[in-house]
Image (cartoon, rainbow, N blue to C red; front, side):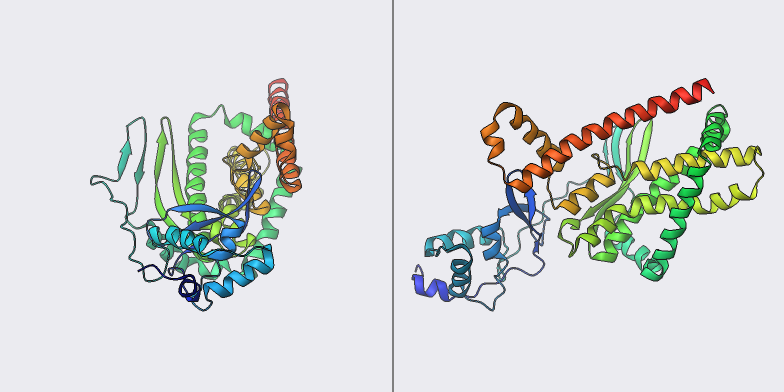
Length: 370
């Protein structure tokens, strides 16, 4: 029997435990929220009004009470049909408490390897979340603010010191490029730094309440790198937690260089080992700092997206700029914040790329001439 409107509005439904709701995100001209299912990990977008209703389904408030809040906020009362459609959507996705969980997607049998010998991935651990949880328990004492703040100051001082010796570092790196054995050793250390970079994302995610779904090796010959897939970072409580997870990799890249800096500083200028270490310090610093640039797919781009609370920053900026050229009324219909964000990022990222190309050309010219 179909419930009457009065009976329907007296219900006090609650979201299924473990359902994740993101903060408001700008996506194109719209403000959206992400909702992620507890099982299966599927996520979908809803608008601000739908989020207002869904986020209040806590089992303590009736639909009538939530409807009153909605009317006070948006100036419109919801009909019973609207509630039925919303509850049907949540029910079909098993997002209401008491609903049977959706079956997890079937995992195809076989090895953790996928792809071809030329391009593919290989899972390195069976349970990535448990692995990063163990690493987090081991490293938790070092993740306190009392430890990280002084370390950050030391890393900043290291980069300032290296910047003052940039001519020497550049000359030694050019020399290193002509020493195959030493160059292989340096790139092996940088590869290890990249692996630690990925694990740092996972440990940081665990520290702030995120999860890790996979740790593995990805290759596109002749390159092969480790990867760590972090889930739920969009649902962390604060921007700071999201930024910490995204920036942890570059932080560890710089931390990796500290013992080599001490070794480098203890050697006299011109010593062959010091010259090799100069190359490692310069290339390692570039590896970390370039990763902080706000260009996809770098970590700096992810950090900027979290800071601005924007989903799809680069593609949506490109879309908006194309509308500015081809359909000005459609571009003008964007809200003011969207216009400012997309125009600023589109123009700023283009200027940044031009600057980087010019800087690279200037650096190559300096090395070749001198």
